[in-house]
Length: 154
Image (cartoon, rainbow, N blue to C red; front, top):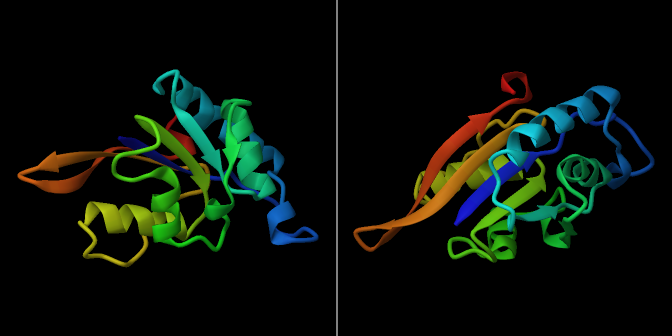
């Protein structure tokens, strides 16, 4: 399974509610640039899952109009909730893109890449992508980092 963790792009600082915060003009450009990079690399059957927050939905929409909003990916989601929602390590499909939030995305990366030994969070820039995959080695499930991309690199 390939698991792509995509943090939402730059959003406005305040709104009526946290979930209603929208992308800034700069954030829309970030999302479009990263979406262009992803589009050339994702398989056609990739499943795109977004948090119910407006800013993550807008980020996902830069990539495609074929995405699902998943309540378990909300800003307060735990590592366990997100991994359960995507079916890690077997996966709902061979490639899942999660458009979500910090610190959860960084916590997922730290947890998976340390084999569950590290509960700290990696810093993930706004609109940044961490591309992971699962594999089995000597009877053990492992996570492999394939790419770490920031909007400035695409």
